[in-house]
Amino acid sequence: MSAESPDRPLADDVLSLLDSFIEHVQHIRKLLLGVSLSAIILAPLAIGLSAYLLVHPSFFAVLEIENEFGVVLSVLLGAVIVISAIWLATGVRQYRSMSSWKERYDSYARGKEEMDKKIASQFGLDQEQ
Image 1 (cartoon, one colour):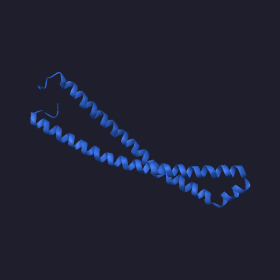
Image 2 (cartoon, helix red, strand yellow):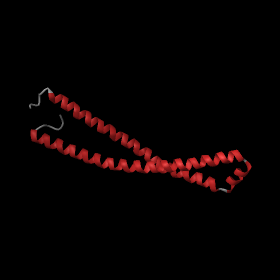
Image 3 (cartoon, helix red, strand yellow):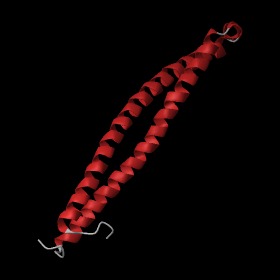
């Protein structure tokens, strides 16, 4: 098949579309990495602060003085601890997932670059075109 075949522009479009999609996924990966790092940093802070408030002597005084408020505050602090623990576990799992995806993406990019060089040298094509 010659380089001027009508099918060639379609193949180039599909390949460039695929490359564009992979680059977009790479951008999303970086964004998700930031989200997972924020979970890894902020969730322990929320858990620590909630635990500190729950064991603080003044907290028990508030529970004794303000019946309804103390109960609601206890429930909310418990919810913060549970949600933060889930957030932390999700952040760690997402971070691990994104790290392994980066390794696979780097392998893909190296393989693609090697294949492009091989094809260009085989057919005498200039890489800059």
